Image 1 (tube, one colour):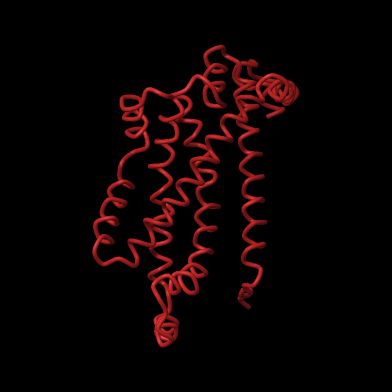
Image 2: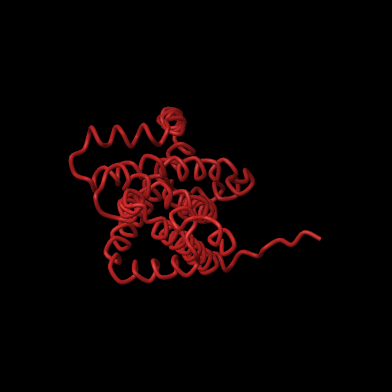
Length: 231
């Protein structure tokens, strides 16, 4: 980047000093946009996780509604994100509702399918052993299914964090006048490539921080699980 900035105009490749200056300016004037984006992201991920776990459990445990839910989820995974964004603009007037809807319908299938696969991966020996004690359905979910699917939930969360960040930026670009996505659009329209690069660097750093936090939470809740080492 340093070398390229010496041979091309600033509007193509700004110098690292210009990007650092722009990044410092973002922290001084645009923190509210960062906070809004993070709030949207957190709300959508929490909702998608809760709803996706419920849908995934129903897919894996209910013979009556499971096949229908699975079909709906599979269909959802085939719908392009751009289609959901355009539909949200038509269907919802409130920008927050638009962005929440877009993120929810895109992220929910990831949780639902992974939890469903987690339920299917349950050992039949464990199921038979627990059923020998004649447990209720709630006890079966609490003592067998729930502990088994927790690693799948953490795996999904770590997998979708980067994807969710990209999607919330696209959603803000299309459906909102505030947030990091809208500020990146404004920087592009005013030919401030240094701000675009600064926002990009900030998003990469946020992704790394969220991945680290998810890893810490996973180690905290799954500290009892021994990690296998392949020799």
